Amino acid sequence: MQPRTEGLQERMKRFAEGLRRSGVKVTHQRLEIFREVAKSGDHPDAETIFRGVRGRVPTVSLDTVYRTLWMLIDLGQLDTLGPPHGRVRFDANMNPHHHFICLKCGRTHDFYNEEFDRLRIPGAVKSLGSVKTAQVEIRGICLRCSKQAKTKPKRRRLRSKEGK
Amino acid sequence: MQPRTEGLQERMKRFAEGLRRSGVKVTHQRLEIFREVAKSGDHPDAETIFRGVRGRVPTVSLDTVYRTLWMLIDLGQLDTLGPPHGRVRFDANMNPHHHFICLKCGRTHDFYNEEFDRLRIPGAVKSLGSVKTAQVEIRGICLRCSKQAKTKPKRRRLRSKEGK
DNA sequence: CTACATGCAAAGGGTTTGCACGACA
DNA sequence: TGTCGTGCAAACCCTTTGCATGTAG
Image (cartoon, rainbow over all chains, first blue to last red; front, side, top):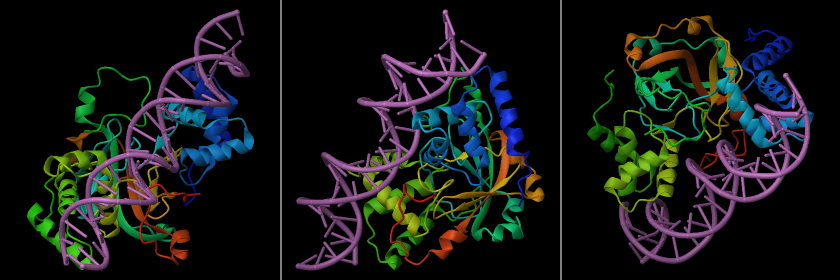
């Protein structure tokens, strides 16, 4: 269950390098916001990251946290969990199935695969809690979105009007 | 890619029965809201469901949609996609890994499993779009939450204060 | 020095709640 | 008929944006 990642030190160094290479400024805030996400075992929400960073950078503001997180996602240094965009999506399919999630529009399609239905839960997972379901989540860009990829938006929006 | 589910007719019937057995009233709105989620191939958000139902029940209100969706989740007739609660969660782990999501508090833990890293993407999925990542999502109740399961809350909240 | 990043405060949008009316059992 | 469900509108909370100030390069 040990994360097979380089140490936090190394990651911070590579991160700063990445910022420089992308031509954006390496600020105290950006370093600390990234550190906060990178060091946490679970996957914090913006508010939690904010509180953590505030311990070290008392003047940081919540909107800087949001702006930075989005920038880091654009640079490929971070990801969000689950469907993108802030809306909750509902699923009435109570049969074994799996998901293809479009990272652009957030639309999610079911697919069926017997092999995936039979995944064996590793013992290590049982020590985390009681398991209810297991499914495969595949993320990518759906056909509709790759077609209309004419204008690459400079910045993705968390809560957009898209998605049916 | 055909859903291996019973027809919509059957599901509606089982649904109404389920409501009766749970001792809640079988209203027009509840039937139509469930139908809207059940018939849709993708996984709609509340607003989309609302618009769909409004075509058949013009007086329905958005808050009834929310209340009903939550009730159906409590009754086990529906699920949400991704972490519960409305907040976006961030992930700095760019190495292959998988997720255990607690359905109660929304906390998400990484775990590692070489077998899961090697999942073969089914051909059928490629027709949905271009694939970027594939990971296993296991849902259940984490240890912390099963311990403090003293008081079963009558109604879960979408946006709660919990989660670190 | 100059462009880019930050902080502030206010707006925005999705979700929830209190209350009085309406409808299932 | 009584109780539970609904609609309305206002509240709430998370997230985003405009603008003036601060700072990395």
